[in-house]
Image (cartoon, rainbow, N blue to C red; front, side):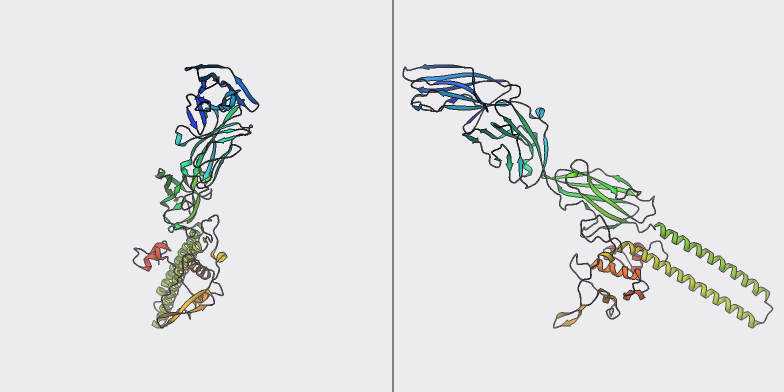
Length: 536
């Protein structure tokens, strides 16, 4: 009985488990032998197919060196057919007496080919940490080899599998699993698993290749474009000049995307001049930023909605978009300009009428100069009364224009409320989304602890009974509705609601504290942020 009881294969290119693998571009010579047996073992080569084994022409010899034991050797030359890419060759020991050796030993012959030239990759995007499952074609599979090429490197073998009725040989890999139907699976896909995956299959008669291009996706943090100047806890409104700069970024994304600024409505006339896209790689992820200069001078609007979105290749994977409103305090909307022009024309007419009246009075005074001093004083008194009335009328018109401008400005604020963060398709009037919650107010301090009472309505905040001090502080956690409550009070005043205590208030000044850095006075803040075009 020989020391090695399995027929031996010479010159394996690779060995996976007990499976010998040879690679060849055209043809290959295979050699099989059994040493030190008595009697000599008859050996032959066959090709295994799904229809059975087919004899391969081969050369068999045996010889002895000591006239006691024999060495048996068989050689064959194998060439691939046109449609075959894998073949399983079997070295068989025929009519073995007394079970001296096992009956067969197989060798897998793989055709050396350029996978990219034979198959177009099927691109698959997988989110990081998600499972991966790649199927191979089902042609009564007998032979399957899975290969992987990361980052355009040479292909390395993941699995060599031989499917037989009585035996299923599966060469395992540390992370991947092979299904009984030949599919390759991975439970936790990471960036390091990106690359080309090739399934090479054959059933002994014909075969082929299935090629996958696997890319791993990582959502950015946050999961939307981030706009400089916005905190994104609520719908963002930025005050800008008609010629200014905007920057948006996506952070920690994979694969890379391009960014674009555009007007949300097609009819909006605004020009964007983009700077070069900035891409910074942080390990496997990318930070992408786009800065643009915009020009909004060819319009009479004082508010416009713009959008930063992902475009180009890979953009459809993420659907990234952020919309914001730009406010231009130094631009009056068309209707306000018309109103201002009307007021100006009225003022000119009133001035001209006043000059005519004054001229007529002067003429009358000249004609009655000879009258008595009493009549002169009477006429002079009438003239002074008329001048006083005209001054009062002029003051009233300025106050009315001032209040009108305030209400127009506040309308922009309370009409641009976004109730749900990150969903920016629509803006709502505060009156549609305001929900009254519980409000407590500090009634005093007892024993070193604040004492609290409850308000029945938010309108009590502005009743005379509550306005006992010049300063009131409204406290609450982020997102509890402090800004929304303030906008609701502005809405009540602008609409002169009959139920609101503010209906009797002549003027309300609304300033955001974050705007007041470096502003020297309330008067300057009003001129800068609310009414820059009005003389006050």
